[in-house]
Structure formats: structure tokens, C-alpha cells
Image (cartoon, rainbow, N blue to C red; front, side):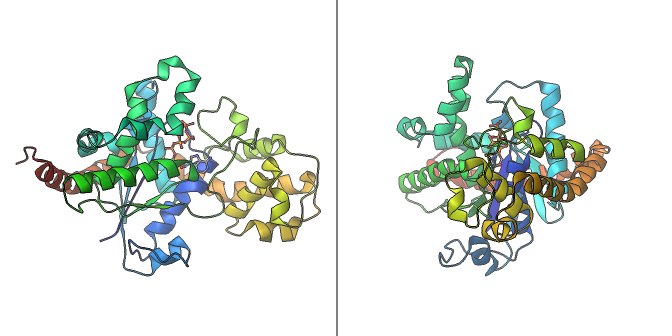
Length: 354
Ligand code: AQP
């Protein structure tokens, strides 16, 4: 059985990058008849996945990853619910997908320890996310942040997941996950872990900051104007796009001409992704247009797509008990599968399990 796993950190408001790069694809994969582990490379990944029967989808809120940087406990708990509400508002259906909180499924952490014994430090030293985050403050030079990719590998492998839909920034961590899975399989002379395939889908695999087209849109950017949050109201969205950094040229008539124009490329990419079309199609419509025309059109499109989701999130947040029930049921389901897999891993390694 093919299985899909992905997650997001409950570290504040989710943004357009999280939505277009990951969440929206999770919904598409949830609603597909699914996969074959060795996808035919000549077709698009979603098409390849669609060729076979249904996949099981597991979507988690990775609070153990969130605490690799300091968190306020109250805010973290609230943020877990907000993230669950965003998943459901975006289209994740708890009746079709298992939706749960990582810290409620202890096998993730237990497998992480086991996998860490197969992970050479040299592999972790190459991870750019640790370097980027720890460079911001010496206080972040912590084992947890350094070991984050091993926990991510455990998150995926404990489900024996075959496909992992993520944004482009997670590609390196996915490659590490495959290396760790191979190292474990080799050492235990087994093929216990499938090698999970990244699903980096759609036009917007890396949405950039609205202030600086060379930086990725991120929750931790100090400028709120760098991102569109899923909870932003219409006025805020319009204002943020209006203030977005751009050059002074009109839009070109071909995608190649966007290559040296990071900010323009980003806005066209966002438009294409929101409209479920390609950058070429957007340029066909807007070639020769200035920002005075394109930015309001982009803002209108974003408001039309995001407003129903924001409203649904608000409704879900008004009933936290129901959200908690969904997460409790999801954790029960996830625990049943992961405890079974953990017993099998322990047997292979020679650890106690009963
Ligand atoms: N800018 C982005 N473009 C496309 N995809 C993105 N993702 C994140 N940013 C972009 C994808 O969203 C998923 C969840 O990410 P996460 O919340 O676990 O952590 P993150 O990547 O660290 O998100 P942020 O916003 O950058 O958080 P901070 O600022 O706290 O580090 C992943 O699939 C990711 O690829």
C-alpha cells in the first residue's frame, strides 16, 4: 500500500508559501486515486500517482520540530489548533486523511533515536537549514535543531511512507531521509523502509518573500509585509501586494525573460499557482502590462482564493473541542500503525519489544 506523509510546524500563521508549496498539494493527493512507488518519470508525479489505487494520507502538525527554537507553551498549543484548522479549511478531510499532532505519537521520537545510530555526523553537517537558523543566534546551536533532519526522517519512515509532498526547501532533508533508510536497510539486511519519493508539485515550489525575491517566504521573517498569511483579511492582502518589491519594467512575453527578475518572477509564479495555470499562460495575458495593472489583479485573485479558507478557519477555531476530537482520533489511528512498525524495527535491531 502506498502511503503519503507530510507535516508543518505550528510556528505561527501559515503563509502562501506553505499553502502553494505544500498544503494545496496534500489536498490534491488526498483526493487522487493513487500511487506506485516507482513513478514513471515521463509523466507528472501527480499523474503517475493517479495511475494506481488509493494511497493512505497522514498529515501531521510537527510540534516536536517547532520546539527546536524557543516557544511560548500557551501560544504553541494555540498554534497547533490553528494549524489543524488551516489544514481542514484548505481541504484536508479528516474522514479521508489521518490528521494528528506529532507529539501525541511517541513512536516518531523513539524511531528517531534508533535512526540516529545509523546517521553519520558528516551527513548532518551538510544540512543548510541548520546552518541558516543557527547562524542567526548562538543560542540556537542546539542538538535538537542539529538533529532535526533525523526526526524528520523518523516522521516519514515510521509510516513506511512512499511519497512526501513538500516545498523545494525540504528536498535536501528528503534526500537525507532516503540515505538514512538505505543505511538502516543495509545494516539490518532488510528492505524494511521504502525509499520515499519527494513530491515537489505545481508552479510555486518555492514562494519568495514579497520584500526580497532572493529569500524564501517564511513565518520567521521579521517583516509581516514579506508574506501573505492565511489569516490576512482582504485589505491586508491588497496592501501587501501593493507594497511588494518589484522592478520598473513591464511584464515580458516569455518565461525566460523573468529569470533575471526575481521579484517579478515570484509574483507571476504566485498568480499562476493560485489560478492553477502556468507562468507562460499568465504572461500571455499580461505581457506588456505594468505593476499598476498586475498587482491589483493578483491581489483580487489571492483574496478570492484565500477568503473562503480564512472564513472556514475562523469557524473551526470557534469550536476547539471539535478540533481536539479530530486530532485525538487521528493520533489513535497513527499510534496503531506506528507501534506496529516500531515493534518490527526493534526486532530487526535486536531491541526489546513485547
Ligand atoms: N516559501 C515557501 N515556498 C514553498 N513551500 C514552502 N514551505 C515553506 N515555505 C515555503 C513548505 O511548507 C511546508 C511546511 O513548512 P514548515 O512550516 O514545516 O517549515 P518551514 O519550511 O521552516 O516554514 P517557514 O515558513 O520557513 O518557517 P520558519 O520561518 O519558522 O522556518 C514544507 O513542505 C515546506 O517545504
